[in-house]
Length: 144
Image (tube, rainbow, N blue to C red; front, side, top):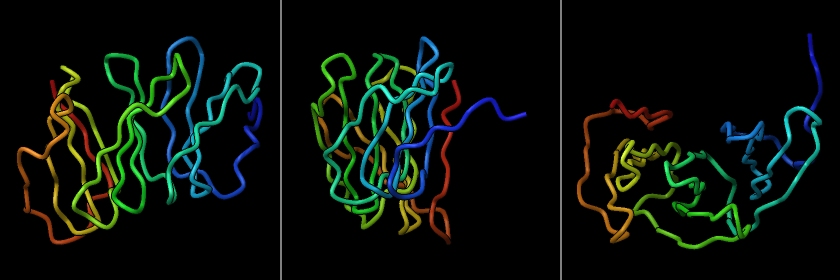
């Protein structure tokens, strides 16, 4: 049975990630990320900064949030100060999936061009590219 609805995005939500303390983050084609209290269904904050729709979200071990957008932007957000703290522009037209290694220092980004890029988050540079798929990447997972 439905316990509540989270209403607030002006376009459809494309991704969700659970956060600590009963919170949820949602990304949308409206170019925003919203934080929600899932018990009360109250919207707590909106993060703005993407210039294209948000495609994926990942929570890093540091507690920071990373998001990717349909124009190749990858942004790092500090939720404590409610601000974007870094941007990586991927060499792809659309970053469709992101995942962080459990150490929190390596990011993998899958794209519409069927490549997976490996990024060093401290240096903010690409360290490797994997081209083993024939179609766009739609999801990634990190194994410990």
